[in-house]
Length: 264
Image 1 (tube, rainbow, N blue to C red):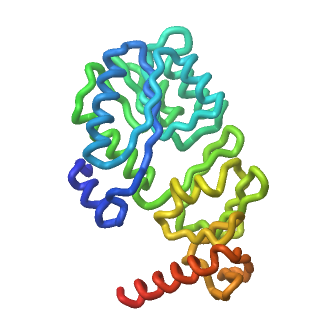
Image 2: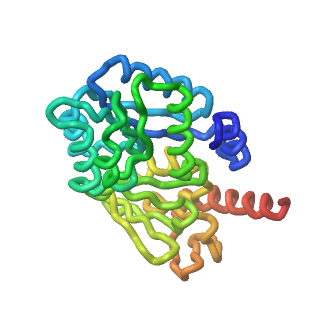
């Protein structure tokens, strides 16, 4: 099991230490002391790993379900089993079945250990017993980051109620079509989702050396086969235009990347 110091070394070796990374977390428990304990732990973890945790707190399963139905995305959910009205098991089933979300890491919390068979079909990441132990919380977060390949580069987007995760190395380019973004993968598949190219570039893909060759196109430089003054040809033969205002910057960026590759 990786501890926090080992995680930091791994992040540094991957060139991602210092990069703005965010984990979206929901905490759902009717005991506000438990919520406060997890909140405090995540704040401390954020400082240690330089990872941002955006946390939503809920004291009922109904409110958590409403948030998900309204479009909220979570990477981890700490979920109390013994909630009133809609209990944690019912919430977990709704997440897996109704919303078809198989990716979110669900961490169950309970004062009892007698729910193991009921939880089997929900496939939780882990099961925490109250009172919570800080070392166990650390292990759970470490496990989520490792299994989610958090530091290897994953692009997350939403299509209706479904969450998709694509390895950034597999993205060839993205195209903006009015209010929709089309993501083209190296295997020929493509996905449409709502977003803005400017935000996608600034928040996620700039640090992976994607090329903003046009207001409508973001290109993974690893798939550039031929560079010409006003266009790029990708390895699959696709030709994309470089806008006049971007040509000098794109040329300088590509030349810099080639020089860096030769030096290695």
